[in-house]
Length: 191
Image (cartoon, rainbow, N blue to C red):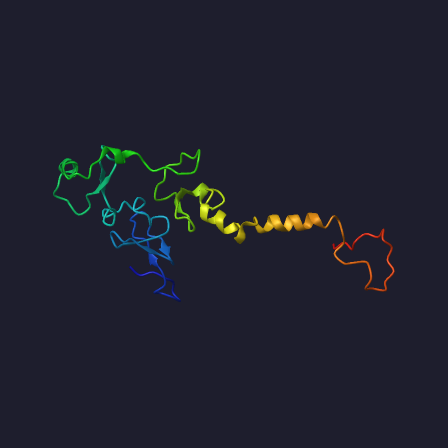
């Protein structure tokens, strides 16, 4: 089907949905049925694609161990026969049924492929809420924050140095300069 305008006859294509036939300048080609559709009919469901499952993977879930068994390439085998074969293979263990949860204390989030994050410093698998080292009490990150020689963290030493100043100004007022400033004047404030 041709498309476009008089000036540009090769521009765009018509939607191949029989009820639409709209001229679309950015058409979508369905990877199932290989037809061209507009933005409204591009999904499999919208144009009722007969080959919508050609790229999909199909699995059967074992009720004993919650393991998924792929059935995509096995058209001739029955699902029940595949489950029986799985149970007899020795891979079916009822102890595996428990789903992994986030190891952070009081967090009961079940870890799935979509909500699992692995810490880059301690390699611990946690949920997305606890993905930052400070949120899951990362042992390696805490060790990195501590200064060598066991003197405490760097910001603790800084705060101790600030406290030891006792409100003294940054510059010394005695000896070096000839400027006569009264001792009651306050420091210069930056705005």
